Length: 371
Image (cartoon, rainbow, N blue to C red):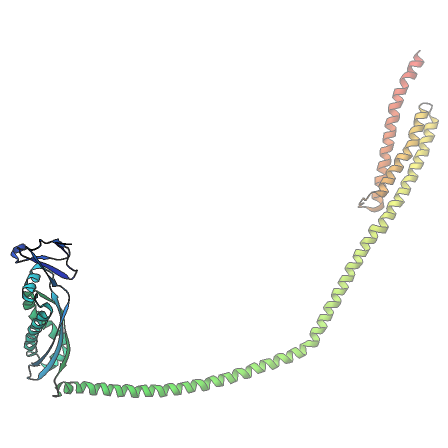
């Protein structure tokens, strides 16, 4: 859009042609857009991205030993407005090249100065200390030009062909080689001992396996012998059990047959005998009642009728008894008691009727005699 400008996230927009804040020669805008008056204002951009500068410098240690040192610096324009103004005034035309060259020169000078105050041994053992001291020494100068250093890495330190560093490493290398040889010998010895232990374990395993197999075979043979001896005895025991079971079955069948005979033959015969006896008793009672009725002068016809009906009543009771599915607990005695009870009940009814009819018949006679 005409007149409206927006910087990238890693850029600072510089608007010249007017005064900025805090007396800055131009206006600095980051993170948002702004309206810029055409023709009267000019817009430029300064990158806030990360840059690298590589330095390779020949330095002299405290022992006057020349060392070739290689390092890499990671830096960028600081984010505050003052740093952006300082960097823009120095690097805006050719930002990347000019910043890298100037940063390399600053660090090279401080690197030579600090290495000159250290021995080779200190430089090799305390490489991070060297980098930290160079950073601290360069901080003020880098801040004055608006730059911020993120890191400094010492990549290599070399004495050329002097062999000083190699000589320093020789005792360590010898110790390392000695330790390696000792470790190798110890490893070989341990391997030999492990091999011997493995062979001993294998021999012991084979011995124990042979013992176990012999014991297993012995147990099998003993079990076979016991099984061969136990065969006839087991067969005799099984046969005895079969005979016992058959005898028990025969006993149970005999008991069942006895119960069936009791139900189908004995009890029906007893019931029939009792029925005959009851009928005979009823016939005798009828004869006796007829005789008594014939001797009486009153109610002869009525008595004769009751007497004639009584055997029929008892006969019907006896017939019903023979056809009934009754369970008599005390055998023939129980059946006799049942029939006698029925006959007694019939006689009781007969006597009651006779008395009732006699009393009803005496009233007219009495009245006749009174007249």
